[in-house]
Length: 280
Image 1 (cartoon, one colour):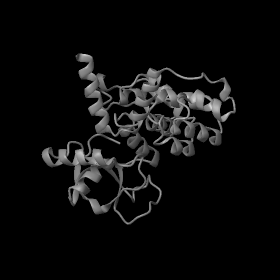
Image 2 (tube, rainbow, N blue to C red):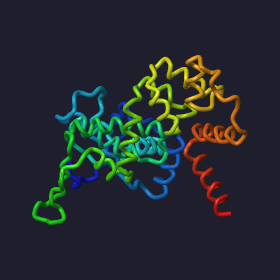
Image 3 (cartoon, one colour):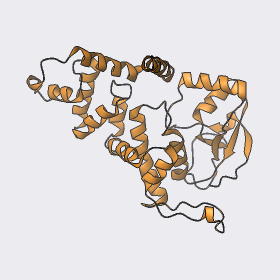
Image 4 (cartoon, rainbow, N blue to C red):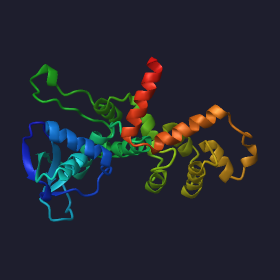
């Protein structure tokens, strides 16, 4: 999939959205719509022709399938536009899925749960596309700057595209690969959905879904404040728990819980308050 693609105007009604990696956030769509209205679209969406050989048959009557740009598509719908600028890309289903995940995985508005789950899927897709090692081709073989680089692992590619360290990438994968779809659905919206340490503590227990769900229920109810404490309760070992936690620990837990429930606009406002406190 080369970089010399041309931007074309495509009717929104000719684009099938299909199942997305993540659903558009209304606040983010509203902000993006305002930006598009004021400044235009900075980065075109990406679509693929439904008839393209690399795809299996897709449901729907649209001419194109959306690959990247779900929020942009929703913003154009919100603005009442009829067409959207887009690149028409090509690739296998795995290549197209890889593009979508790479575009989303490093976004700041993702919860920690979304990030680790997306990273785990990304590794699977990258290794299906490239194998265990990845040959990164530059362009003109005659140019010293564009020579084919050495084969690299999947984490090198992800780290390069996201700006994460390889350790961060591998840690996210080690958590996400232990979270099955049913567990991910249960965790979504929970008090630990945006707490990577708590997610890591949970998967390290290697519980069945049934027990893991009970642990999450304990945390959501506030009856237990940590994964360890919730596990002791559901395992019938609550008598081994500390009698109580400090007042400041309770404050910290409440802050963590509120953070997990906040949307991106609220999180940004809170971070400004923290920065002012630190600077003051």
